[in-house]
Image 1 (cartoon, protein in one colour):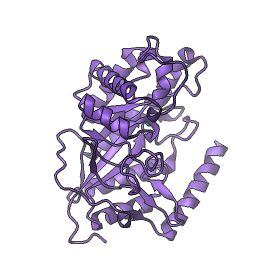
Image 2 (cartoon, protein in one colour; image 1 turned 90 degrees about the vertical axis):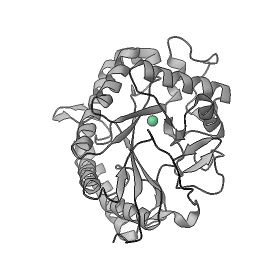
Image 3 (cartoon, rainbow, N blue to C red; image 1 turned 120 degrees about the vertical axis):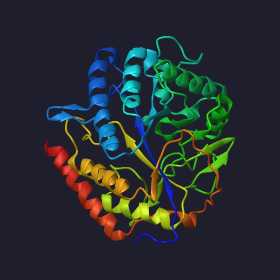
Length: 332
Ligand SMILES: [Zn+2]
């Protein structure tokens, strides 16, 4: 399947690392158990959180790019953030910045002057506020022990042109907030194109999240919880054949847990293991890397004909698999 003409492709295993208290009431009481659940993935049968996934990747010689959300520490202090940074750094994975503005109005000391309402997305903030928040987020990560940061992803992919201008101002070279399935087309960034390969915009290199059109015509992200292994495998080879520059996967620290986060999702876990083995075996073609020391050299064409697609058969298998996962999740 793999064509002789296809060259190497950069693969970014991006993991958004974040904590939620499942609502905004009584968060100080809920935080310690939320931390165990989201960071360590503590379940009655074992721990399947951040360290579990990072170890699995490292055992296969694969680098994770962890976009770490630090604003929660404006409420809960530097220590839990430093613990997260330590877990990643001691396993030699990359630490970059992620930012969920839902935490802004929960800070003990205001991060910006206007905290009157909770604003869910970065695009709801002025450019001055975005500069301030991104600068603060990076300072928090550095203060928690992270090496220099040169890449960013907005929470829930909710970015806009101002986010890229703010990043340029703060001195961040790379962004990976563009997602054709979520806010990308409304962001004002490269309008009408739905880019799927890196491009330079407002002084920042944008590495869009890899998305594809599935067999029933829906756009989906390249994410373990959203695609079957067969779909992912076919997308990876297709990206090589289309001579794409990069493939950007999305994971979360809680990716292999069921929605209630009290059990391992075996289907997603098997997909992750297959992906690890595949990337390890095919490292001559798929170059897993991060944003540190990245120098984008070749300009890449972005147009809709280069959109990745999966066939009806693979999509059908995934729909069956997802239905089975939902049924199983309900029963346990
Ligand atoms: Zn996030």
